[in-house]
Each structure stands twice: as C-alpha cells, then as structure tokens.
Image 1: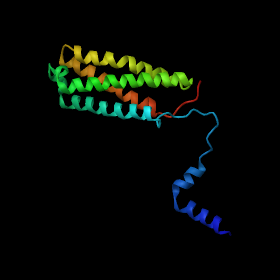
Image 2: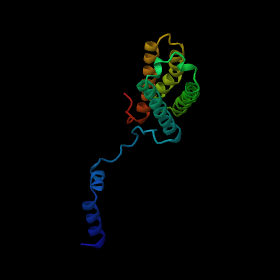
Image 3: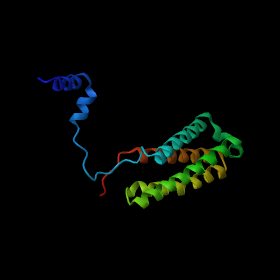
Image 4: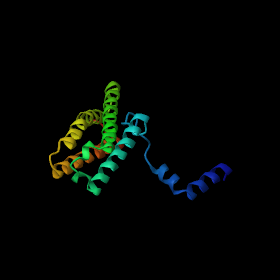
Length: 158
C-alpha cells in the first residue's frame, strides 16, 4: 500500500465529518445556490435577528403595557434600524430580480420591505396595550421570517 493511500485511509477513519462529506452526492449542476453567505443577505439576517431579539425582549418585559412606548428613544432607534432593514430587503429583491434568480425569495424580500413600515405604524398607532402586543408580535414574526427565508435551503423552481 502506498503512503498516500495509507494516509488517506487513516484520515478518513479518524474524522467522521470527512466520511460523511464523502458519502454526500456531488452537487448538481444548475442547482439553486443559497445567497445566505453573500454579504448583503448575511447582513439582513444579522440585523433581522437582532431586531427580532429586541421585540421579543419588549414583549417578555411587558413594554407593550406602557402607553408612551412608541414615543421613547429606544423605540425611535429601533424604528430607524427597522427602516434601514426594509431598504436592505428591497435592495436584496432588486439584486435577485436583476440576476433573474430565486423568484420566491425575491418576492418575499419585496413583501417584507413593503410590510415593515406597516408593522411599525401598527405599533405606533396601537390604542391599547393589547393592540400594541399584537402589533409587536406581528413585527417579531416578520423579522423572524426575514431570517428564515434567507437561510432556508434554496428550492428548485416548480
């Protein structure tokens, strides 16, 4: 047995990840490629995750109970960041549209970009703590969806 073959066998046996990777079928040519690792989309995921955490924290802490919740500086900073995120989502939509790829993600990003200002407005115009909780909860779902749609494995066109 040559030294190279012996070394390959020993590495294969020593690291189960190597064996698992070798067992995977080769990537199919023309298969959809995930954009999650691209800088813009990774930034969208990171920002959405942070903002989602803030909203969940507010819900847990009972911030929705405060009548002046949306008038505070913390919410104003959040609103600014969420507005920037919506602009990034639209930028992602336009990039995917220009590439002519990933129709579902392209459409979802546009929908999130258009829905974000409406969800912020719902938080700000809520007339009661119950309405504010619902609006914050819907905003949290939107932010979480933003993460999940980008990080989900791409699907072939149907």
